[in-house]
Length: 314
Image (cartoon, rainbow, N blue to C red; front, side):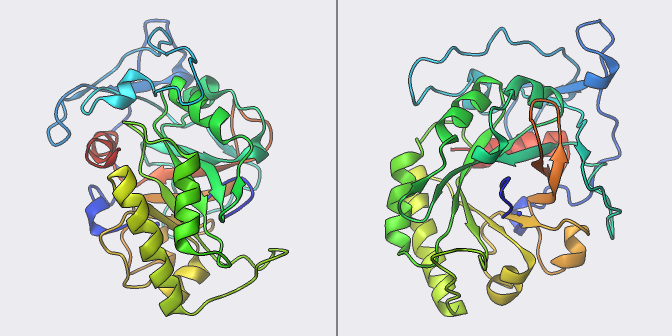
């Protein structure tokens, strides 16, 4: 994972494996500019969402901050409730021509963040197209990201579905790391599944261990089983190409994958793997953030995103 944040999917996530050709609905009532076009998914059951309709952004329903583990906005707590999807208006400090297909046509874009993004204006980031966020929470068995709780609360208050991720440390036990994550990440209804970020870290100053494949898979299973028992949902697996090739091909088909691929469509890099999320840039830029931010897309339409969240949120 880059310093900005975290990248994979199983057949469970293949709700719509190609970007939709639908145009995201526009509004013209003066409550948002043409560059802030939105689509709201009408309420309904996760498996049978109502047709999309256009509505303006509103902050009226955003909850105030009450305590450290403030609950997320109501829209994030109730299955089938509507989420406003903004057309992505991200840029990139180092744009590339993607091999295979570009992430731009996808309807649902998101970000992943850590303390390195500094103070984030989450409502502004949402209006620029962040329809989901993964937030760094912990690393190893003793490190917590300094900005985690601030970002966790603020993303929810801005109406952005968010999940927490853990950077796995290969010099500590799976049990200790899972307990550390649970100690620091609240179990909140409506949150996205927790994420285990597994990759080789050649730049670590105190742990460059590269355990064998059998050990890797065993540790991952222990860690994810503990989190699943606590949060009630299967964790998402984030990974990068080299780690995937060394350890994860053909494994964990029941889990959602979040794949890093910054020069090509995931099918070019992970041809045997379906995926839920694609991290396509570590050099993105957006309103609401100073400096660079990691950019991602969800593998489906706005409506299939609503179904995915309805089935897999905590």
